Image 1 (spheres, helix red, strand yellow):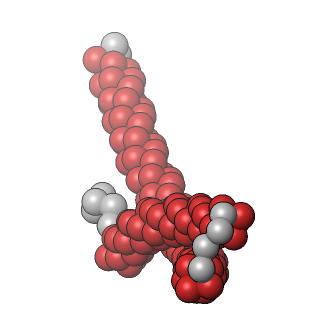
Image 2 (cartoon, rainbow, N blue to C red):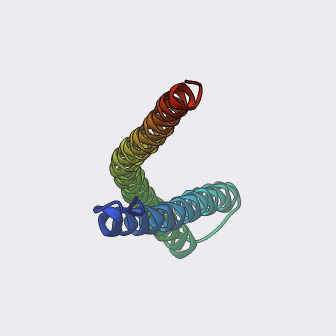
Length: 162
C-alpha cells in the first residue's frame, strides 16, 4: 500500500505558523496592555501628588505665581493621565483583537487536523481491507491446494488398491 499523504499538509503547516504568529502577537499585546495599565497608574499617582502639593501650597502663604504654576502642573498631569487611559483602552482593544485572531487561527488548525485524522483513519481502513483481502485470497488458495491434494490422493489411492 502506498504511504499516507495528506494533500492539505502544506496548508495545515501554514495555518500552524499563523497560529504561532498569533500567539506571539497575543503575548506582545498583553505585555503592551499591562505596560499601559502601569503607565495609567503612574500618571494618576502623579496627578494626585500634584493635587496634594497644590493643597499644601494653597494652605501655606504663597504668591499667585506658585498657585498658577501648581494649577498648570495639575492640568498637565491630568491631561497626561487621560491620555494614558485612552492609550490603555486602545492597547486593551488591540489585545482583545489579538486574542480573537488567535482563537480563529486555532479553529482553522483544528479543522484541518480533524480532516487529516479522518483521512488517516480512512487510509488505515483501506489498508486493513486490503490486508484482509490478501489473507482471504491466501486462505482460499491454501484450501484449494489441500482439496486438490486430497482428491489426488483419493484418486491415486483408489487405483493402487485394486
